[in-house]
Length: 119
Length: 110
Image (cartoon, rainbow over all chains, first blue to last red; front, side):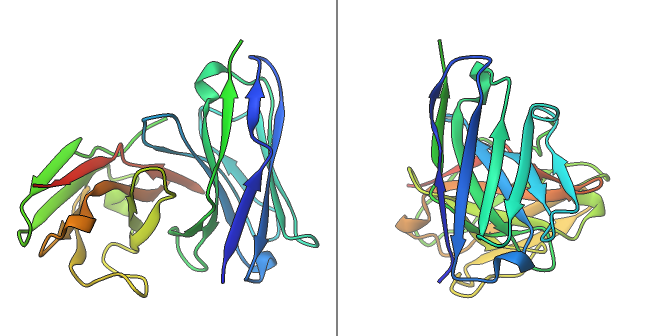
């Protein structure tokens, strides 16, 4: 079965950096595009970034562009999110999510990892 | 970051039908066949319930249906059940290689 397991969340001060990881299993990772989606406490979902299956194409949401970087290691089935220049408003649960094979739906989600940006 | 517009809340009694709207623009919902809906229960990850406007993943009851007219997509939950009480989010592809989410609708089963 498809499984996505995030790690790397935690508390960090404003201006700091953090790298999230997502280990994928149960499917052919190199075949699928992958997203990061976040959810601030008590708030709605916000799309963060997407990376194509071959890592040749990436795109970011307006609020993180220039500060966050999405990448992947298809040899190890791992998705990453490098987060720099963190702000208080980046506090959220970050979900690793699989893009469906042919469209724009997110067909599987991880359980999420909490990032707290606070002084 | 632009957000698709959903009503913050909706409600219905068991057995009734409820429709939740998701309004965007011609650059997203109106110009895309890739509208999806997600169900999220408290403290859990979202779950895909509809994709490409009106298609259901395996295992999702046919009580959940979707449609689109112009810049507005809709999710209808028929025969409401207690377990349908959750937050619902729409999403749509937008521009080149971008995804937008709606602000979410809290569905209450009375």
